[in-house]
Image 1 (cartoon, rainbow, N blue to C red):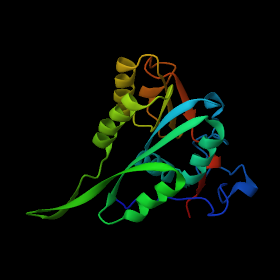
Image 2: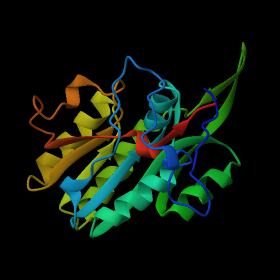
Image 3: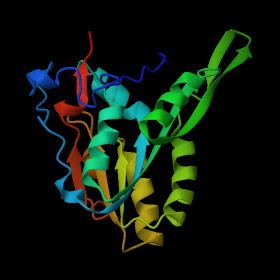
Image 4: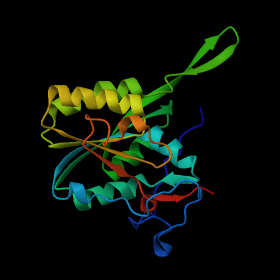
Length: 212
């Protein structure tokens, strides 16, 4: 598993590096990426945000981009009345700098350390997938949160469906929204066909920067 690099926009500017030339042309013309991340649906609402960081990072890289998590956080704060941002990811032992970056951007970080296991054939990385951690902590957060809306930021069909099912079963009045990238979103979480999902939002080019 490659080491995840969490990209940010300019330190003193909450807009992405390409913002002055926005909208940025899609690096993969076969995938139609939205020019803007449209959060109008969430205007002046209380929202619990659950970020599957690795899913977004690798989805963006597959299209030639990096995700600007700091700009996403700023955009969310500009739209929502109250927002609780939670970031789940796996990282190598000692990479506290990743935790600190998310803390600085306004997220609560939930890192899972990648461990090295020795086998007969050599060393092997374990704990590379944070899905179980996402499910465990998200269930607690959903139960404790006063938010009316839960936004699951992932295109992973099984993970999102399982989490949405938990939310609808235990909190049927909660609105479930997804945030994900075009070309990397499972059809299982299409709100037009999945009754567990109320709305889908696409992560747009305004929250991405070119992967050089």
